[in-house]
Length: 236
Image (cartoon, rainbow, N blue to C red; front, side, top):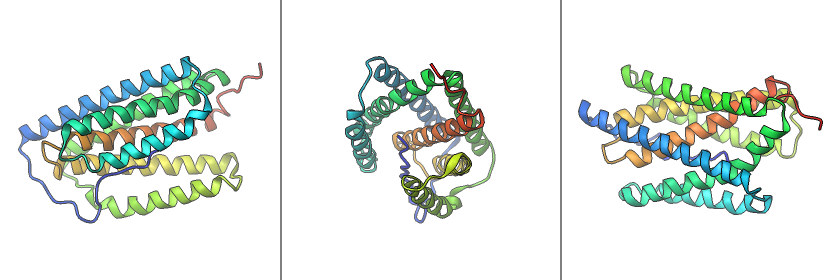
């Protein structure tokens, strides 16, 4: 579910100069794709929970999402294929997320509220960070190397946590670090979209922000659940 994908090369990103009209067109198309893919993901998540999608589908869906993310990195010159893959990814992510979100919503007294809060905070963060990048003259493209190694570190710690018990405090610190990392990725991706992406790169731009949003959502959800004492786990 946490697809830590990113298609930008932090060491060799060409600088692209676009007119204001091109910038406006690009961000409008990216915003539309981001909103619609998130709606598709939400609908797929509801459907997966509604039909009681079993755990036997977890690994096939997980493998499928990684295959699509990998394929998207080669679809930059084919917007039609990129769109199909993007919406396919949004469906598969929703099918992956649905059963777990359903368990949280039903298993905790305030689970549904916390899920909504995490989604709302993620939307506010992405919108706020994007607005800041777009109206400021700051270029966050230089964060690429640091974010890359931060991502490697996060993955390593995540793998270790599968075998070593971290405890609530350890999980909270890990989630905070993950959220901070994807705040950085959001700044980085918006900066690259503004400064280094051409008007035909809207699909890849939307993919990057979509993955940023999903990862922010999951880490914020973990933070809120931990801070609320598990959201008030139901005993019935």
